Figure 1 (cartoon, one colour):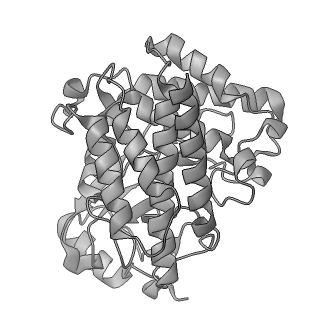
Figure 2 (tube, helix red, strand yellow):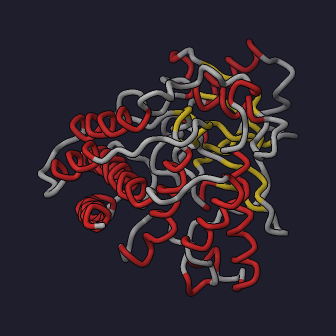
Length: 345
């Protein structure tokens, strides 16, 4: 496939736009490639004769309402510059859809490795895997310790009623992509809505925090947290619950196409130990964490179903989509079991 005609990226139109809004940015011809991984927004590596950037834009085809908001993603990354949370340097945001057919933003490439697969993590060994896991949790605790107003994000979300809105919002997201019957989905939504816990704190929430949404250096530091498309102000335990689902999913759902790097066999510690470390850093009470874990599995099921819907329409770009649909009923069943166990106690 020609670099000039990558799906969702027209280099001629892009170069014309960059010459117009930031003429000193580009030096030489533009070249691009689609970056592997990522089942949602499209991400490209962009190069000229001296620079390497990453360009992010929404997916092609069916897009869930309120998802894939480039302006929000750009804003939160820019706001976190200079904080203890490592993020890429962003250069520009374009909301003119005539350039690439959708809004996009441009940021510096961050050198490092994304641990996506078991093969990626195989060389770490238990000691490095353990240390990296605690660094990952420290960064999450740092994010949840930032005063949103102090970094210009005081109006980035509506904290009041955050969890209730999340439950209803993700159910609506599911309805917009409903193309088949998912046993237990309606019961799960009802049980989640009936047992919403009281939020202990309002923080910046990443919305999809996991190991493979970070860039890691050769000496195992977290160089950048990536993929902020779902960031908002809300309940920090929503991030921890989702991270727990991702952390444990490899053992629960064999063959899943996401979060494959983390496993006890590779030396990664259990999430219960990591959660205790997080609680020590943040002072949060983790008693209601099972509800957040169930909600996270529900949310992930909705995301997977939306991508499965696009896949069945031939609207996905890249590989790794064919097994996502099979994950949905397994995630729903796991979430229901977690809630029933919580309610029994």
